[in-house]
Every structure is written in C-alpha cells, then in structure tokens.
Image (spheres, rainbow, N blue to C red):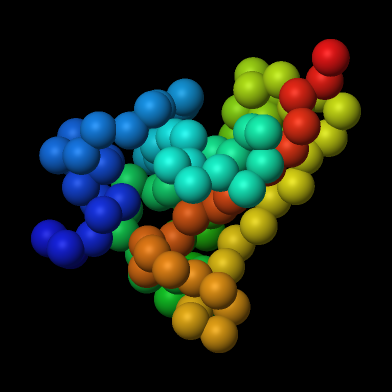
Length: 108
C-alpha cells in the first residue's frame, strides 16, 4: 500500500508523535484530536478495515486489544477511556488502514 498514510507513518516516511511501538503495532497521537488524549493504534500489517479481518489476524487483533488499556494508562487515562473503530465509509472511516482510536481525559 504505497499510498496509505498509516503505512507511510509505520515506515517512518511521515513523522508522527509515537507513544508506543513493538513488532506488531504502532500507536501515535492523532493530528486532529477530538479529545484531550486522542491516540491511534494501528497494526503494522496493512489491513483495510475491521470488515477485512480474517482468522489469520486473530492473534494480532487480540494483542492490540490487550495493549489498549496499557497505552491508555500510560497516557494518563486512569479514570477510563473510550475506544472507537470506524469501519467503512458508512462507519466514518477516513483512512483505510485499520486503526483503534483511544480517547479520553487524563486524570488529575
């Protein structure tokens, strides 16, 4: 996916404010935040959307979901957080690379 902005971020062709990275996923700050903390967690493997997920992605998606609370806590979201996955144009998806929005207000 040479025209995928998230693949370009993953490949370090476009800078991002990265808050977490491992061999499977990358999490960075949204450049148009809709909450005081607004992070995007993406798989390093390109997957257009949740609707395109197959059984072969089960372990990856599980790892991502288990990492969300840790990333949220590290970002100061200790009172709770919201997750959002927009799927398809009708679901509000704008970048067609699966991503999990992690949103919230840091605890004071």
